[in-house]
Amino acid sequence: MLNAVFTALALLFIAAMIFQILSIRAFFSTLAKNHKDLYHDMNEPRWRIQLADDSFKRGLKYIRSKSFRELGDSELESIYKKIKRTDYAAFGFAMMAVATLIFQAVSQG
Image (cartoon, rainbow, N blue to C red; front, side, top):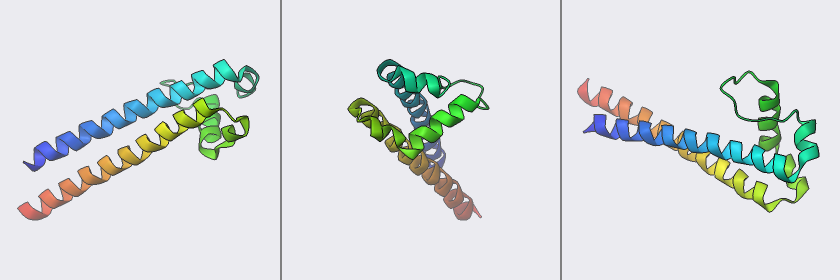
């Protein structure tokens, strides 16, 4: 039973992370569409497999710092809220998965 719970939580964590990646891509796409100069000044950040990309890191810092609020773009604000919700969901699923593993180890110990 606990294996099934752990598996479900792990799959929910993966789904939350995929949704977060898609939300970050949507944020950058909206930034490129609605605020071309800023997007270009940020060296056109986008999500890539190569996570060492500096423009992606700067783009994430821009999102996390909430500097986009100065633009007054309600679409960016909406996407940011999705990103934050998936942050919390992924963290919650990961913590519940770890708690399930710990509970299983203790109960079988």
